Length: 163
Image 1 (tube, rainbow, N blue to C red):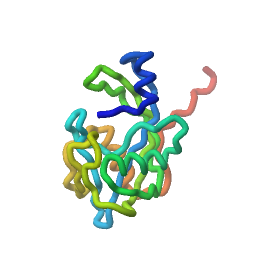
Image 2 (cartoon, rainbow, N blue to C red):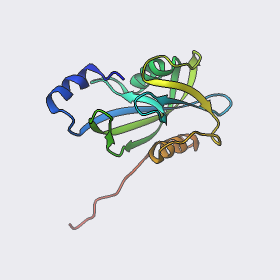
Image 3 (cartoon, one colour):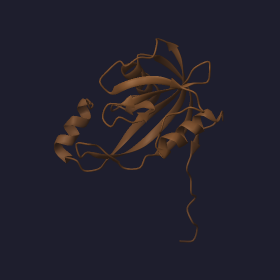
Image 4 (cartoon, one colour):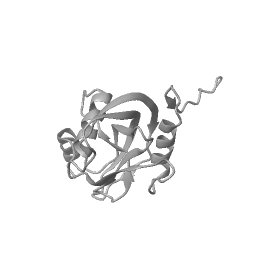
């Protein structure tokens, strides 16, 4: 699985130490209410389609790029559904990262879903009641996007006054 050039250059300096990165994920919903997922080639697990933003890249544009690269579909992001911080990810090569994740609800405007690069083993549509096994973090973001809210969900704990 290829990593962006900027990240390879950064990893050459910092090694496998934890990095703070910006990521985007798509909850792509078709007209039948199904969700498009991909089975990742790095760990074999089902996931939301998405990836790392390039430096200076607009999030919605990066999301659209990732959807086309991984699944061959052109999407229209309709709503930023959540802003969250991932648990620390440990990759098979030893790299570690935590992501500021921007999750968007999207619809396909062109293309038929298919494996379009080496990052996916397969892509498939799933009904919300027939999802494959997903980790809790992914499932929470997916459920938030499907809940139909018209606002972005994010965590917030106000500072304690007087401390």
